[in-house]
Length: 278
Length: 286
Image (tube, rainbow over all chains, first blue to last red; front, top):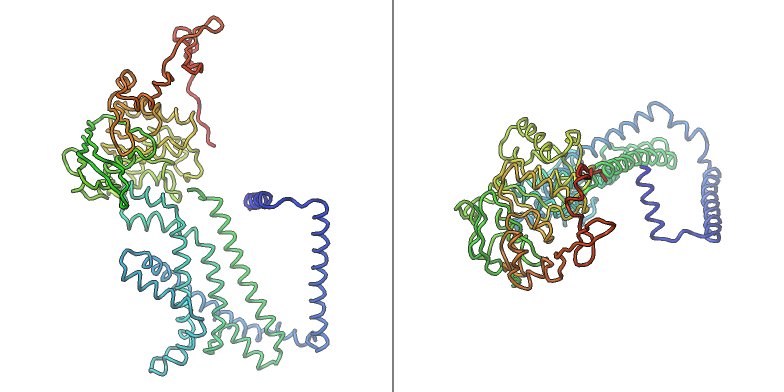
């Protein structure tokens, strides 16, 4: 970590002149002012909450109740389950799509391009509606769980396909040459030389794709699947504590996504430290 | 034996890399193709393992036209050492060396044992086996590249400017090692470089190429130096500048050999005898 911080700071020094005494004073002043402005905004919001009685401890204490927490926990479990299953299917599928897209067979690559561009281009909500409203009109119905997971897989496979493709393209062209020169077939070269390096390169981006997937799972409320957002919604209809519920739910999302992002950063740093050659 | 017969290579768009090339390379011989960029030297070498296919003409190995051989099998039977080593960054030194033998069906354990022997042969410490290429110095990486080239015990070794990316001291050391290896192993080596000194040092025969893969002169280093075929060769080997005409100057009571530019090239042998014990420079990881 310290090494990467050092390089980035030197990069900053190369790109920008270090601020002089005047500049430093200006930066300090602006920092203090903006901090004050943010603090004022927060205080204002709190004051507003207070004025409307939203800070009443009784409205918050319920979130320490075991049954409420269990209810939200159920939602969290649903969210994690949906995300995990979507990821486990969508990521390998995305890899296959990426391989198909760069294939020499134009039929295969054409099909992959169509798939990727289609599902990358439309909002996931529309896909969910297709499964909720359009397909049942033709007599095709799915359980609620799959009405959420399948659209997640379709959309995520398209975007991760592009992540994988970027990774494959990012592997040094010399690696293809080197692999060919020592007698690896095109397939051997792809699977034992290019892909292992490509996957390592895109691992942090994949974790970010996981964060996106987790946030997409909130569309579960559309199909009434018991994920966190939907549980929150139900809780609101019971307690009528709209602000409190959604703040608690947001906090849970933020904590989970923060953890995932941290993992991505740690992986990134570890990879850079290990085999950042070529 | 490797033979080139009327080989021509034209790239789409009309670039003529090689016009009409003929050459025979005897078994156990080391031949260096030397020329400036655009001379077609790398293109020619790559025709041997079918990384490049000639537009017309044929390349044969021991009588077999390479065009009739499966490129993948062919490449596995020929050692290849490339510039900046071309090692696989995600694999350890040992795994890099064993890649080809394992692909050819050698048992993993056997391949590993052989890899350890090869590491010793090319002068790599056993402790480096588990390292990744990025953890090695340029010279060490190049040694791994040579070990990998030799791993499947090929008869032919192709070397594409293998020492171009290392500093002069390490390069010299690697050149010496290669000479020693060739003395022991007697492979057929085709070596590509733009450095005429390297060519003279390593080649039993040297092929000097003009742009378009035209042979300016073929011969032993002695023949070429003693009798350059034309002005092109003379200027390429530096004979016209007198860069290779050495003379003796007396400095502090010693006879110093000096080249045409007045740079000292060495001291006369009789006077260095007393200091002959100095070992070669050690190589340090960067």
